[in-house]
Image 1 (cartoon, helix red, strand yellow):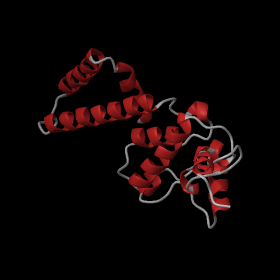
Image 2: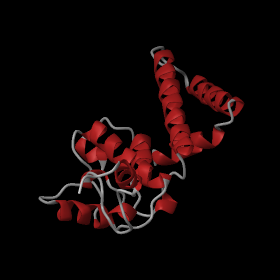
Image 3: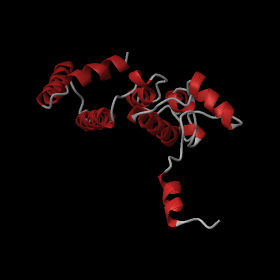
Image 4: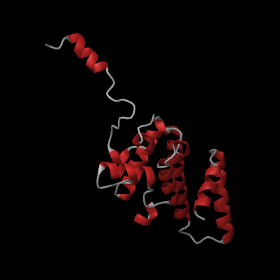
Length: 173
């Protein structure tokens, strides 16, 4: 029989996926997606973390010889530290990407806004460090270094991000 306009409409209204169905590129699926579970925006954050990892390292975060092996890697393995692949990667950027790639959704950034905030703060810290390095071309006395540090902290407090400074300092330990 010939399809009617009504039956064509029904076909386009049917969902393309069902519970337990895997749809997507294996290397970028979140663990919950790989298990066929319900997903939310945090699955997209995981996928974004896979893309960021690949952009920074030049290789995929999760690989395997087959789709099944790649999904197994997503579920059970952790990608190599970015610093082991590239020595010029900021430990803070590495931590941001690793948080995106957490296996448990509750441990990832909870929204794209949270992730964007972390990336903006990272960019701000990089700008501050670069500015400090430009100033440091002149030999500083210990008192001047203390004053410069205090000025950076004061600037961060003014912009409501002083807690991030402590995070950055802890990351260097």
